[in-house]
Length: 282
Ligand code: NDP
Image: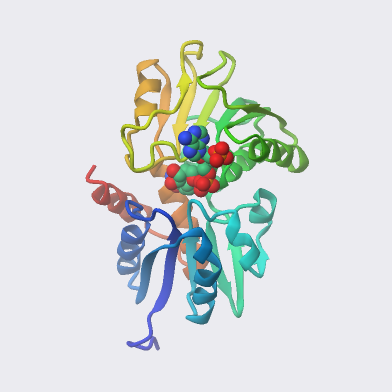
């Protein structure tokens, strides 16, 4: 019998968390599945991350999500990682197992489920812009799904090189790294391009420094940014005639996997999609 004064708690840790639809979506989902659970969003600066995770433990939270910029840094505060999180070196989901706090990663699988509606990555040559938590999860899952070749393009060489090495270590895909030039011309033979940096998040004016001048007409272009849902980057790709995929499907799918891990229930994804669209006034 649930105690009416003791709800189960989940939370989001990140900075910024303003504009992130996860709390809104999860609260609608708890109501839809008649769960007396609560979800809170916490703005956590990097220097407070350790204290925030200790707080989650002390207060008995059932689980949570981790977002930019903490998906890699949070690992040192956890007891164990899932196989996927271990491989990616990034955590976007926390799950309490008895006294242990376990790091999971649902981002890559969420992205793949979303991409499946547009194309199959198997055998493809794919470029991933970025090498942070989201890029790591996506690049590894694409490689595990049979992508032939993955090119990582990142501003900071160390992070980009490390991700290319991670792909080579754990998967059969060929991997390369390129330091992001001032303006990156998408090569004609790239078949899928994933914008996995935080450029454009909460900033419709931000421009991703790429040129589609040489891009093939069959190119599939995905953006992980979900707010705004239709980014300037996707608009540019659309004008070039590319097929585009926004970040909304990914946010719904990765959250659906997290919800199942916390509650054991297969969520109603229609409610989730409607909640995200309502939150973003789409
Ligand atoms: P991180 O902070 O871990 O990584 C950020 C990445 O963006 C790094 O590769 C960084 O490059 C790059 N970057 C940031 N600013 C610039 C810039 N001005 N020029 C070039 N590169 C830049 O963030 P995450 O990986 O966790 O998140 C990235 C994005 O993905 C965010 O917008 C996040 O909201 C979104 N996301 C969306 C999800 C969805 O479900 N749709 C799920 C998860 C994340 P460098 O290494 O050089 O610093």
